[in-house]
Length: 193
Image 1: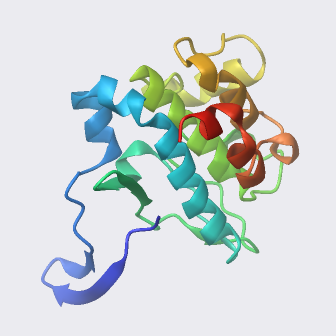
Image 2: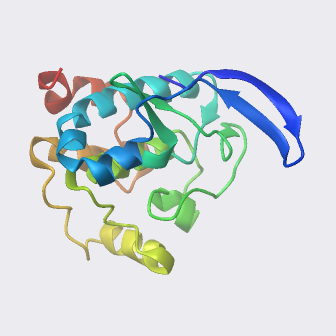
Image 3: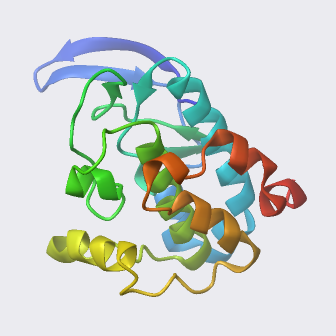
């Protein structure tokens, strides 16, 4: 569930990467243009992203930029792309897209681990299910995230049966946050196959 790299070439603008063609476009476009269809495919997004993250994490890679714009659609299969912010799990980098980055990226209270990607996956799933990102507040994204982590912002409404999974993914403590095993065992993910 990762976009295939086909090659690279040098152009006047710099190095250009050639990736497999995504006939379905980006998940972001599906959310914006067809929110009902996106919501119907949310469990598939969860399964496919879990497969992609599990694959890279077992190889020591942390993506750090999981978001709808970096998930491409291939005939009903969702694939992760854009590894521009990725790091090896022995490195430390505090980066990510505001509104999707995990609390530890903002607060630097914990070592950055693969758990940061599962937080971002949780935010992505909230966006798929509700057609909005509750933490995407422009310059105030960090404040919205910290308000949520500190219980000053309610849990996003409209997530239905996925709420227990999302609460596990959006756990502010990285060591208690859901990972691949918990996602694959989740009742909503399993019942929606």
